[in-house]
Amino acid sequence: MNDGKTTMAQQIARAASDFERQRTGHAPKSVTVVLSEETLVITLRGALSPAEKAVANSPAGAAQMQEFHRQLFGTSCHALRQEIKRITGVDVREASAEVETTTGAVMQLFATGTVVQVFLLASSVPGESWSASGPGIPS
Image (cartoon, rainbow, N blue to C red; front, side, top):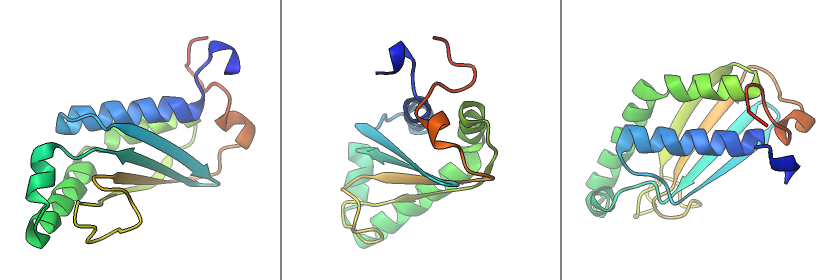
């Protein structure tokens, strides 16, 4: 385990979970972070509240939940983008989010209630940096 230090992936997972809880009031059940060159993908499983899942049972409700989360993410993601920059040392060029509802209407490959956040970084983060502690992280 990296001598008690937190990896960049773990730091981003924690930041994304905290971000989701702050913006929606509901913490995801689990978070996965994957980096491939300039693309950072954060998957938050179990991110929809029971009420949101109920609304998403119909096609119209699913579309409403997807649009709501897209807009919410778009208007509130600046803090998470800044946190990703602080952790990786790299600017975030683009960010978007997509919600897979219980109907699987948009992204059937994701598990029910999953929120996927994709960040396109301005440049790649070296692999050795990704699995090591990031800037500003206490030992």
